[in-house]
Amino acid sequence: MKNDPLNRDFNSLKAALEGKQPVKQQQKQPRELLPSWTGRQVQLKMRDGTLITGLLQSVSNYEALIQTNEGHALVMKHAIDEIKEVGGE
Image 1 (tube, rainbow, N blue to C red):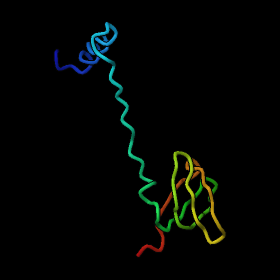
Image 2 (spheres, rainbow, N blue to C red):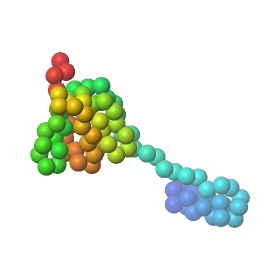
Image 3 (cartoon, rainbow, N blue to C red):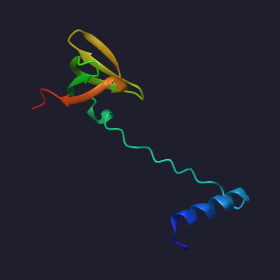
C-alpha cells in the first residue's frame, strides 16, 4: 500500500505535523482563457441578454475592459454568459 495516494498524503501530513518536513501547498490554478482574447474584436452576451461588441482591451481578476463605439465599458466577468470573436477574418 506504499503507492496508495491516501496513504502517501497521510504520511506526509503526519511528518509535517511532527516537524520533519514542511507542508506542501498543492493549489494548481486553472488556466484562465479570457486574457488570451485581449486585442480581439469580440461580442459579449451578458446574463441579461445584452450584447456588447468591441475591442477587448484588458482583463483583470474580476473585470474586462471593452472599447466600444460608444466608449469604454467595464464589464464584470461573472456577468458574461458567452463571448465570441467577431469580424476577425
